[in-house]
Image 1: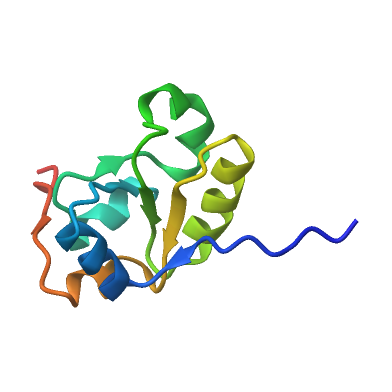
Image 2: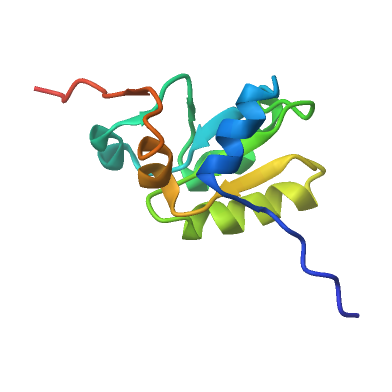
Length: 114
């Protein structure tokens, strides 16, 4: 059976339009903790990729979920997996966090552990 290819990728500029239109996406950062020091999307949920299956009850099914990582590879597979779990609005941010920061969006930086 050849399943049609599911479109799960979204470009940063499209996300900017979604937000302007009043859609309220939830960003989900699936990177490892040490990767967060470069900054993460303001208001993002931080769930390491391998922990996502244990946190499904924290993810809304009625909002777009924007998964992102460093380059967009990990988020691509997680978005596909979430679609299979019934999250029909799971999306992968093309080119990862840097693409979003390039839009001038707000971001947060965690304190480094001293």
